[in-house]
Image 1: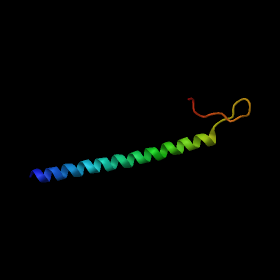
Image 2: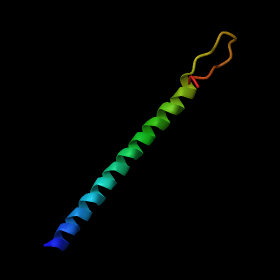
Image 3: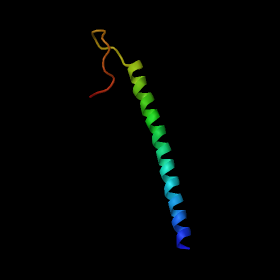
Image 4: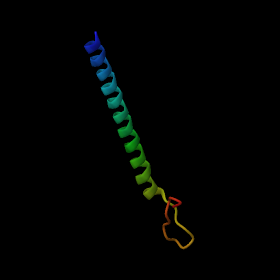
Length: 56
């Protein structure tokens, strides 16, 4: 009974980790797309020079 519970617990942990890693990959792709779009749509400042789209 204990080995069966250990195997089920291990499967649950690995499934959870796999789901979390897949979710993190999608979040990373989304952040990369937003970051790249920021370079495309950044506005020009008063001197006609293209400014930074971020505040820092």
